[in-house]
Length: 342
Image: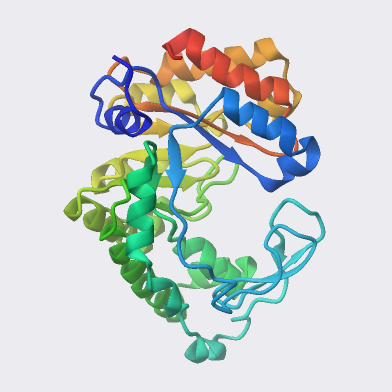
């Protein structure tokens, strides 16, 4: 039986035998700059994806941001963080953090206009689409705290267990809870949050501190998703092996992580069948420098370690400026060959 994309994704994360692993593609603006719209649009026509994202309030139109996020120059986000970008198609870096001095914390105001959703428009989008729709918001308390405070400053603060960190996280979390609650009241199929927690070989902070400070925040998002009948998706770059068990415990349905930073086979031995692996294929070497056959071997490694006919995988990868288009093609073709699909 051929399923709709929405059915396919839901069955994959529920381990209820989808007709094939769902497809998902994270398309970076830099890829369009490199290959052009015609080539990218042709790729998307040949390999349609099963997930979509509903658009939320326009932060720029509301006057909450300035500049272009992926353009060279200066971009200010909805929290007032200034990103300096020297390369079109990617995101810049914060060089002058807004909270370089903790005294500025008293003046920090959340971007509350983003809480005013056009529910009718969002619900109409969901009704018109046959794809699995994720909410157009993405809480990221750890990363937003870095943007506001500066990464180096924040790591020192965490090491010293400064009380200001907890106050900042409380401000961020209060806003994110309201935002997630608002989106959970719409017709979207899933909610999402993200934070990059790993370096190449270890967590960026100790798992114990992560469990103390951040796990409770994510557990709140999971509770909202569960109470509203939504699926919960998470993204985190780097080596995060130590927290997979925690993500399963709080109720994350699907996790997007850099599998190739870790021991994929050990991940499979410990966690296959317990959480859905939402990609990915290695974008540090395989997608941009490997041969087509090496790409197929990388997909086979993921299939062998994590795939079950009942579900538990989403064939996702990131198409950026460094991704060879023939390798992108090879990823989805390999998934079809190795795990079935049309």
